[in-house]
Amino acid sequence: MAQTKQFKAESKRLLDMMINSIYTHKEIFLREIISNASDAIDKLYFKSLTDTSVGMNKADFEINLAADKEARTLTISDNGIGMTEEELENNLGTIANSGSFAFKKDNDLGDDVDIIGQFGVGFYSTFMVAKEVTVITKAYGSDTAYKWVSNGVDGYTVEETEKPDGVGTTIILTMKDDTDDEKYSEFLDQTKLQSLVKKYSDYIRFPIKMELEKTHYEDADKEPTITKEVETLNSMTPVWKRNKNELTDDDYNNFYMEKFMDYEPPITHIHSKNEGIATYDALLYIPARAPFDYYSKDYEKGLQLYSSGVMIMEKCADLLPDWFSFVKGVVDSEDLSLNISRELLQHDRQLKIIAKNLEKSIKNELTKMLKNDREKYEKFYNVFGLQFKFGIYQSYGAANDTLKDLLMFKSSFEGKNVTLAEYVSRMKEDQKEIYYACGESAERIEKLPQLERFKDKGLEVLYLTADVDEFCVKVMMNYDGKAFKSISDTDIDLDTEEEKEAAKKLDEENKDMFDFMQKAISDKVKSVRLSKKLKSYPVCLSSDGAITIEMEKVLNAMPQNEGNKVKAEKALEINPEHPIFEKLKDLYENDRDKLTDYTKLLYSQALLIEGMSIEDPVEFANLVCGLMV
Image 1 (cartoon, rainbow, N blue to C red):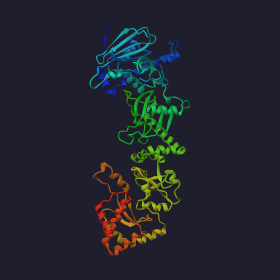
Image 2 (image 1 turned 120 degrees about the vertical axis):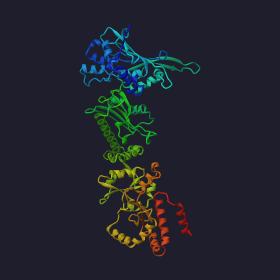
Image 3 (image 1 turned 135 degrees about the vertical axis):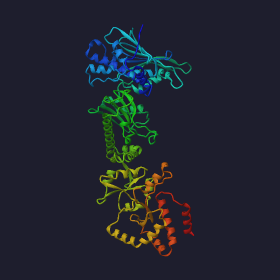
Image 4 (image 1 turned 180 degrees about the vertical axis):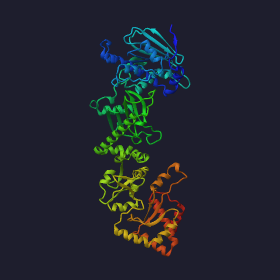
């Protein structure tokens, strides 16, 4: 009769922690047991390479699953190296003792042979779902098999037994009873088991087999027939581990659409293998379309992270910067420092190196696309380009070097998207600044009165139509040493020396009138002045200060700024070449009350041109009616 033994570690307390604290998802237990089975096979396969008496080839090794709903048992078996009685005691009787780690050390394997389970704790995850765990094992080279049984913290028994199917290990989990909160029966469902193998253990390098029930509908008038067929549940060889010359675009695209549940092929992929300080394989994809929640707070970025073919994290956010959060893909590394549960990553130097390398790879791929396939890049940019601008703004310029050459803006030059490098290459010889204009759309910007003179002088203007655009260029400050300049800034200077002298003289002659007009709307504008940027329009608004007119519109539209409105410092500019200027001078001399009304009307007109709301619609309507009468 088997004698009950106690765990050698601080058993009850430690095992309770293992079950209730270390693992966050109960389904992880299957990944851990399959990984242990793979390790056991690895060990025997390694011996077979130097010991011909093993008598097994790689094709002979396999892992088997079997679920019995009536008995409420799940059985996982392998034909690996098995365990002796002493190894059972050491590996299962002492929590956190790793047979895999000892095997690797004793055989001086270094990093040449990949052993997954090196912490010795994964086995105990079974107690999250099982009320009793039975292990039947027979070690290679041994004549005796042993049975280890435990129901958790109360200890375990070990006794000799029979194992007629040869060496290896069989683990039988007797599932806990279902409760209102937990349905342990789901781990006996073949569809659930298939999905868990696919999710976590698809790339275990030995076949994971299971007898599945198949329903056949041969005749609509007859009852369907049910057969049982053994199927391999895992694909074993990851796409990213294969040589590029073995793969076609269809191979890459089909993997992406199946793995990431997209009905549309990606725009491009990046398949890389890196060896050195951080060794890893990566297969990254740039999607053709954004997920429905991409620009919402619910979106989760991240790459699938594997350690030696076993999925550790479904979305590892630390591998991607926010500006490349649209990238999908997988990273597989043997060098990661995992924590004890293998669910979380220690934030170490290797992870940061991998992330930095991936960022460079993504940037290089996008740069190559921009250079070699402009149409494809613009298609991509129309979907995800906004994220680059947010990246620069939210990083306070830290991402400038990475993203500045990937940015595109609509331009007054043929109405096309242009890069900043393209804009700078076309700048006039004496032009020192990159000019831009803000508006809801390119069509709206085209109607801005300030734009007319820039076009007249042959100066290219970038059209900033997204809310984040001006914030982005303000953070960037300059590109290639050329500062960004809004065509609405008060200090825009496009005049020749002669024009400047004439404007200065005219400004001085009408200083008193402008002061009077400013006082009429002193709560609205900082100054009234002659315009240096208007050609045919009578009036416009300019911004004077860090907060521009466009920023005022964007910030005040945000819900969190309700009741705390931002206000740009504005100047009302009058076109001295427009007939209205002579009218204003006449009113200043003969009817200053009417000049006050005209000033208010011109200010309201300037607001409308800028796409802003009139502050007092009733007053505006009365002023218009007064002029009509």
